[in-house]
Image 1: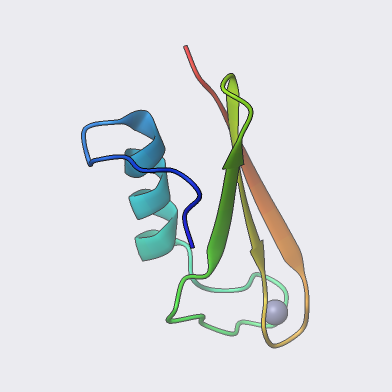
Image 2 (image 1 turned 120 degrees about the vertical axis):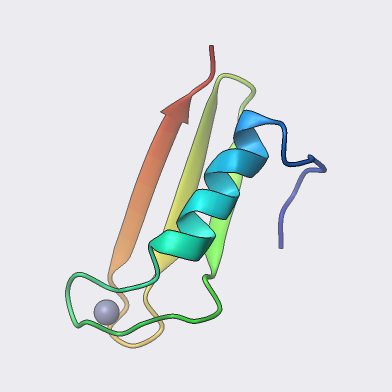
Length: 67
Ligand SMILES: [Zn+2]
């Protein structure tokens, strides 16, 4: 599911783990996605995490800028 390899010491992995483990509940319908199906992509300068609620279809995005 993750299009890059990274270990826990990288910002990419840190952010992925943070959102997969802490942000599972949809703010719109309250559905808790235990799978934590966050999609991630990066262009080398930013990381975008996107989640689509399997219940209501609402999407959320978090964008990180790499330093
Ligand atoms: Zn929802």
